[in-house]
Image (cartoon, rainbow, N blue to C red; front, side, top):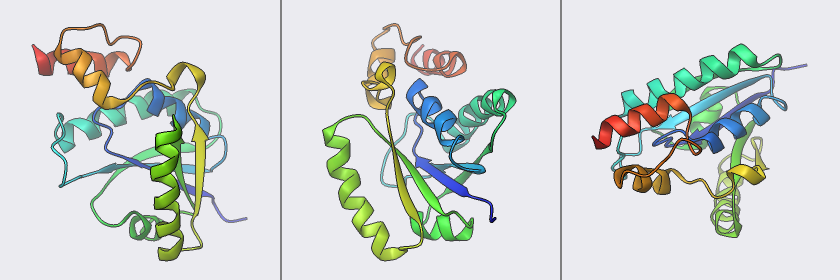
Length: 166
């Protein structure tokens, strides 16, 4: 049987506990997971690409150490997601859903992606109950105002956020 490679794309600005939860759960359904950090030229992230990669890599070392299934790795992408999936022999794209508003956007993207490559399946994981409300945008806002972000992001990310806003 061929290796089931999945791609979990995002900006990860910054990586949150919600992202880590999706990564852990995605590893149960694939042999290898590529966490694809988007360059996102159209956005202005708080963290540089190198900083986002380092934060994701740190969390993947922890996840991979505790995981007895597939392994996760991080890669950068700046092209079409479906082209990136093809280049990496991925058979599925993993996406997390938190709310109905996420579904509306993802539904539209799923249709477009299916036209670009119908052989790559879109797989949606509902956010865990404890993670449903976490959004990177909100975490950055709380951190910028000196709020407690410890329950929203991994410890290494919390340290990096505090440093950005100190």
